[in-house]
Image (tube, each protein chain N blue to C red):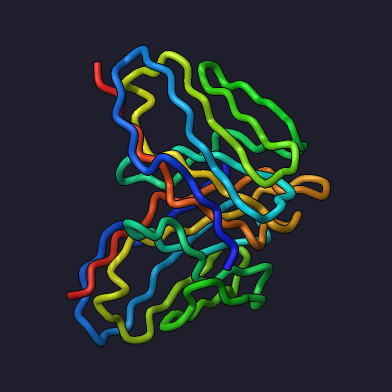
Amino acid sequence: DAGITQSPRHKVTETGTPVTLRCHQTENHRYMYWYRQDPGHGLRLIHYSYGVKDTDKGEVSDGYSVSRSKTEDFLLTLESATSSQTSVYFCAISVTGTKRLYGYTFGSGTRLTVV
Amino acid sequence: TQLLEQSPQFLSIQEGENLTVYCNSSSVFSSLQWYRQEPGEGPVLLVTVVTGGEVKKLKRLTFQFGDARKDSSLHITAAQPGDTGLYLCAGDLTQAGTALIFGKGTTLSVSS
């Protein structure tokens, strides 16, 4: 199993403050992803990374930025938190084989509340 | 916008009953995954299907990939309370996994 650790597990923050969520993996996987999960919307991709300093936007990237300075760490930053960003955030890595995807391994999530 | 429609959204059944969850799209997928998620945790991969018409079994769970690779189903035989959870399907539009789209999920509750 890929070791994926998300921190913090829970956070309450005030509107307008910056927030950074961390995802750490231990198995040198190239691709890492940030999703948010909301009732009625399911899992939606925010940003993903395909290598150190290589990132791209997902479906719901507005208001978020990411950085990946080391293979093992993928950071998600809410530049100025809003109540609409209250959600559960999941980090994931993709496990791939020869020419195909086996699946994703997810972290345990960060529950973020913006008040 | 690529869509993956999952049905039903909610399912509440008694222990021992059978059930089927459906996942449908107009898009063709290179693979499709099914995940199960418990409260407070991330989704956990159950199975990946790749070939059109493929059937995979995992104990009492049977997964089928449509011939055209646009749809899939999950059938649970003799459901147990331990099967309770959120079931998610996810389709891969590429082979690199960078365009994985998720259905909104089916919340299954099995009572004893």
